[in-house]
Image 1 (cartoon, rainbow, N blue to C red):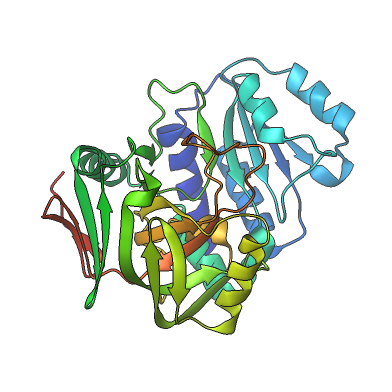
Image 2: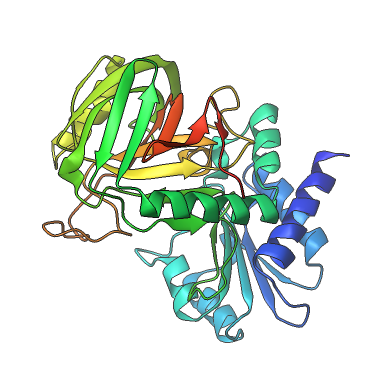
Length: 335
């Protein structure tokens, strides 16, 4: 099967299985043709939604964009295919779409996946296995939500989350009962953070991180030490220190997000440069910095926190109250 046919098949599953778009509802696709992946995805959604309205971003100014939205009603679908990230001044497009109760499928930063291998990996990552994503996602949520202690083992290094975790959020393509339908694709993630940030202590190994250019870097696993929720030491490369220096100019180097990626298309040897997509890679990732808009903590103003830098953990084993949920690259809970 050629890549376009594969992408179109995955697009159909996203539109009709994940988003549950109805045949009679309107659809608007805003796209650019600046990169090979953007052109491929535009063709895939044309095959999926031949009756949709397709508008090139290059000729769609803010007034025409709002006019197009005014023609739509709640439950209609907007798809954004972006080589970078579409902007109308400081206007945040997705927030406006959700305010209007429109479903959203967003593909962004496609300029970061330009070689044939990364394009193929991105398309593979679009696959929507609803039974696995929803079933495994709910099983992991139940374990993490109930845990009094979560441990992460990386060889001889152990990281301990004590005091329980915040209720997990799921990005698995099931929007039942949710106010907002859709989001950024590819998907596949269950995430939380410590209820009390200061009760995270120990050491772990990282194999990758987003650099100051927002592109993913992969390295030989290196040690980090965390005390009272703050990254205090590391044995990483100079590029990692550059990231920490950037964060520390504005805020503390907190470890907040505890993210379990479910997407098997991505991993240490299946790398996308785009952090937005690669953070779904199967395994564990953290965020560094004070920013985490999903979980409100006393003492943090979401409008003033700035950094949420994803880093990827070379975890051998993850356990909730001693019960293993992940070992050697695979989740081990039944669903």
